[in-house]
Structures are given as structure tokens and as C-alpha cells.
Amino acid sequence: MARWIHASARSASILCPVTEIPEHLLKRSRERREAIGQGGDAPSDDAAPSAAVQKSASAAPAAAAPPSGPAPRTAANEPAAPKAAKPDPHYVVAAKQRRKVPFWAMATLSLMPVWGFMYVRALTDGGEVAAGPLAGGAEIYNNCASCHGAGGGGGVGYAFSEGEVLKTFPNIEDQIRYVYYGTEQYNLAGVDVYGNPEREGGAHATGEQGVMPGFGGQLTDYEIVEVICHERYTLGGADPTSDEYAAEFEAWCSAEAPVFVAVESGELNLIDLGEPEEFSVGAETVVVNPVGPAPLPGLPGLASGG
Ligand code: HEC
Image (tube, rainbow, N blue to C red; front, side):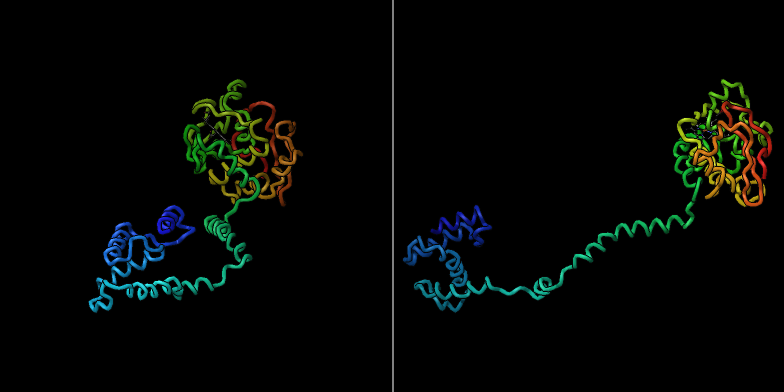
């Protein structure tokens, strides 16, 4: 019997939550019982209490139960029982009684990280959310940043920042044409200077700095307009409110720019356009020059109206 309980406690303590008693204590208790003439093989439930007897008998100086009778066994048996029924501490009781989070609150709580993300985004964006071509252009510029620098500071290709790109291309159409065809096509067409020939600081000759890939066909026409708006206004620092650039900005790069909208919808094809086309922007008229089916030399000054 004792063997069985002992073995099951060892192998399946989940089924039989009996505190395991060290072998040496059992042995001692058995010897002790043998010594007082009770026999070694006591019933199973004797194992624990008899160990307790050992302890109390040796600890208690009163020696109310000298090791000569069965009395201490029954006396020690009683206190063992209430031990199991020990009440939960007050904090465990409180935890058990506490109301759980209701399911609808869980749904709300699960959205907290999303809200946190949006909150941080709103703070760091500073409310300066670009709309129209400038928003798209900032993304498309990922195709250009490796050579021209994330902030347009230059690299393999020229810098755009601090007005550099505006010096090369006073006319936005010349810049569109150059990005559309790239260095190779300009070389093939025999165009030596792709931008302003009277450029402050010297004209940029085709192939002088390296090879600029052509993006016509890789990007749509309106995506090229978008990225060029980004290069001129966000990176190059053109002032959309200045006399020089206000008309161009309103026509090409503002949120509802009519030229951009026409290119995006397919109404205006800058490549196939045979003749300059006029667009009215507010009280002004802006002339859009064709990009054309082949590279052309850049023009000095502002060719478009405004
Ligand atoms: C592989 C590198 C590379 C990539 C990518 C690249 N460029 Fe260029 N870019 C150049 C080089 C090199 C030049 C100078 C070319 C020359 O000397 O003919 C240049 C020149 C230019 C110029 C003329 C600048 C000036 O002041 O003369 C513009 C505008 C331009 N790139 C726009 C873009 C745009 C827009 C993109 C992305 C859609 C882009 N580039 C991607 C290398 C690159």
C-alpha cells in the first residue's frame, strides 16, 4: 500500500498530490516503529504523521509522550488534517472576486497601439502634409536618392538643393525632357547642353558628370512631373509664393494644378504635344511647351508665361 502511494506520487504527482517524504525519514520511522514494536509495514496514511511524531517527540521537552506507546500517533494525526483547508490569503480572495475586463473594453484596449502609432505620426509630421504632385513626388524620389542624395545634396549625380537645379533648368519643361530621355539619348541626338546654356556657374554639358538614366517608360509622364516638382520645390528650394515661381507652381505642382491634372488624366500628352498650349491659372496664363519626341537643347530664362 505504502509502496503504491509512494510510487504514484513520484510518477503522477498531478493525480495524487501527496507531499513526498524523503526516503531516509521513512526508513528512520520504520526503524523507530520496529524498535517500539509496531512493525515496519504500517498502513500508508501513517507515513507522514509518523515522521511528524519523530519531530515533535524529539523537539518537545515536556515529553508528554515518551516513545513507548501509540498515544502520540493519534495526537499528531489530528493537526495534519486542517492544514489542507487553510483559507486563501486576503489578496488571493480579492483577486478571485475582482471583476474581469469586459469584452467590449478588450476591443477598445486592443486598438491602443494603433492609436498610439497614429498619435506619434501626427506629432512628428508637424501637420505639414504635402498634397498633390509633391506628395507623390517625394515617394518617387526613392528612384533617384541613391545618386542624388536623400535630401538632394548630390552624389554620383548633381545636387538639387540650394537652388542648384533651378539654375540648370529655369524652365520646368527642359527638366522633364532631360529626365525623360537621359544622358544617352541626348548624346545620340548630339545635344551638348541639356539645361540653361547661360547657367550661373557654368552650363552642364551632357555626360560631363556621368550617365543619368532616362526614365521615360519606366515612370509615367505624370510621375515624372511629380518627382520634378519634388526636386524643384521640396529639395531645390523654389519659393511657390515668389514672383518667379508662383505661376509655375500653381500650374504644375500645387494640389489642384491644372497642367498636372491634365497630364495625369491623359488629356495632355507632353511628348506628343505639337504646339505650346496655354493654361489659365487664376488671372494668369501659363504657356506649356512641348517636351517633344526627341532631346532638345535647354533654353535660358523663363520660356513659359507667368
Ligand atoms: C544611376 C544614378 C542616377 C540615378 C538613379 C538618377 N540620376 Fe539623375 N543624374 C545622374 C547623373 C550622373 C547626372 C549627370 C548626367 C550628365 O552629366 O549628363 C544626373 C543628372 C540629373 C539632372 C540634371 C541636374 C543638373 O543640374 O544638371 C536631373 C534633373 C536629374 N538627374 C534627375 C533625376 C531624377 C528625377 C531621378 C530619379 C527619377 C534621377 N535623376 C536618378 C545620375 C542618376
